[in-house]
Image 1 (cartoon, rainbow, N blue to C red):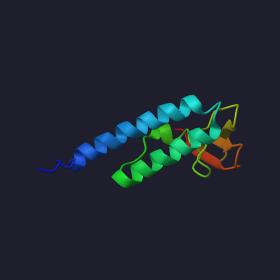
Image 2: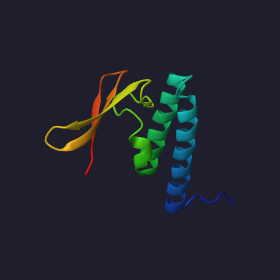
Image 3: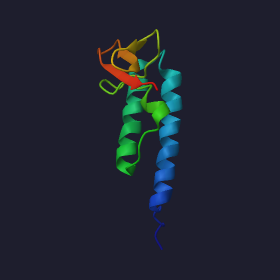
Amino acid sequence: MGKRRATGRETKRLAAARIETLWEQASKAAKTDKDGARRRMLIADRVAQKARIKIPRHIKRRVCSDCGHVLIPGENCRVRIRQNRSRHLSVTCLECGRITRFYVG
């Protein structure tokens, strides 16, 4: 008999655990090995796409959507609170120049 294949729910659970593990490794390696951390986050993105799940918000907000670097305030990103039409947090990646806005209530 062959091995049983994981069900859809189990696959999603395993993928979520793998994404969390990759995030922990990337956040630890971000200061010393930027390319290694970036590579881990690209792998996490591929795992999420393959399993058709979303990357958790707390991870997604700490990774540049353009270049994939792990954002560390003061090291490779700038964080500002802005009040142009509505109040938002403006995060600028200093690696690629991408500006991301997170709206605050």
